[in-house]
Image (cartoon, rainbow, N blue to C red; front, side, top):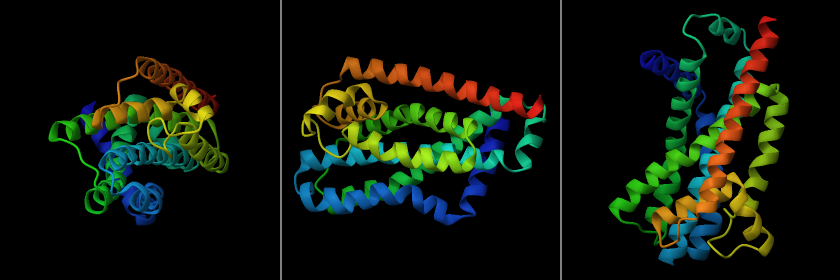
Length: 246
């Protein structure tokens, strides 16, 4: 199955990189936010700059997966190639795995400008061990957003998926506390953020790079979101497949 998943991932990556603007777009918003808000306001404070950088990384993880999987899957479903691929004997799992691998690769590409801006233009810092922990944490927090994107992509037509992804990404970012540092958000955001996937993800990232304590409640909530979104993604895929072949 691994070779089939890699084949599907390679196909997805080639298809995406043939349209460079698609790769550029996933990195634009977090990089622009870094330049507009982090560099001029907290860039010279190592602690704040570090927390702000991983918040923007979380923002990039969310937006990349919402648009890559949400809009990308719905677009693929409208093409004649998709129903043909579903008839192949490989099954659904290699396709899912390949799409996830491709999404993780594109996510890594979108994070490069954010990390470079933090390194070159701010005082953000971490230890080698902290960098490794942060990289692993980034892959972990990507899972619920991948599943969210797949749920959107398999349940909605392309025009609806674009709108839903656009409507979701900013409220999730703001209410999850990604626009501020730990303890600096308005009261309602501080109260609500731990119960959102973005808030749980940000708290894991903050703990990875600094002295912010791991919050068991946020971790449990993030796991719960992952289970719910995974169930929604599977339901949406089976529903779409049932409609196509009924």
